[in-house]
Length: 346
Image 1 (cartoon, rainbow, N blue to C red):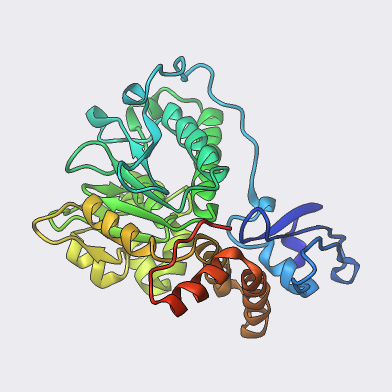
Image 2 (cartoon, helix red, strand yellow; image 1 turned 135 degrees about the vertical axis):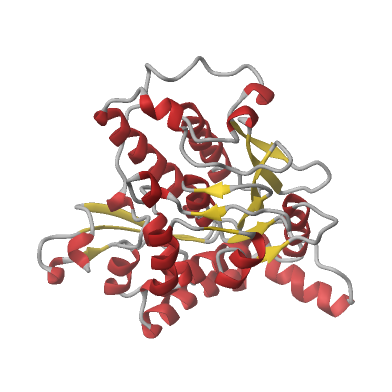
């Protein structure tokens, strides 16, 4: 509904730096007063006014974001190197365009602290602006780990205001992960509980290690509910009945159960880790054109919130700019020459 849109919003049909259809618009109290100004390449099409309004009210729209000051009391000085960071962006050796978002609090099972949130946000900001990046894998630096949820030890020392700010920052960080224009994969090599599973739900795909036994949202057993999007993303992914069962019981599932429920998309073989299986998926995606992947993610991610007619309009808006891309020309040339295309994201 239009009433859920902020006074000013920016909706991007993200394809590439050269093929972006920004739609800044102002919304009054009456939907009829919606005014849209679209700046687009000459060969791109307009997106219907109401479609833009609908896109702007998705779960991670700019209207739902809030700006929260960092916790100066709880933040330490910036770390000097990646190894001492709680979270950092790390290119994967030998795989151009693939990076890890590495969680690195092994002694705390990667429990989410104030400092970790800030470093996740910094890493995601870098990823957002890296046009060479094609795939991001969220993983733990520690074998047999993923993320055990919020740091409850740190939480004990927080005031109510600080808890509120913590959750707002966490929601914003997770929305930034979900909003990345590239495919993202969660490599779950250990317990993914509470905020850890909520983080994984923000990724496009989830891989669980075959030996993982704890995947769930146990917050109701702690007297609260999931507070960083778990109730909303679980419904969208699993459907209402299974989301209710997951949250109401606080039950922890093993990898095979999580696969049967639809929480994860893949379970690694006994001889490999989830991170290794995630790299295989990234390798499979490497054969796809970067601009096409970005356009596909935009069209697919927004589709559940649109009618079929609106979705087809958005699909066309994402499709048409690709026809004049260099990668499209390269794909056709490579097909004629019976060779693999060399895509450059142009």
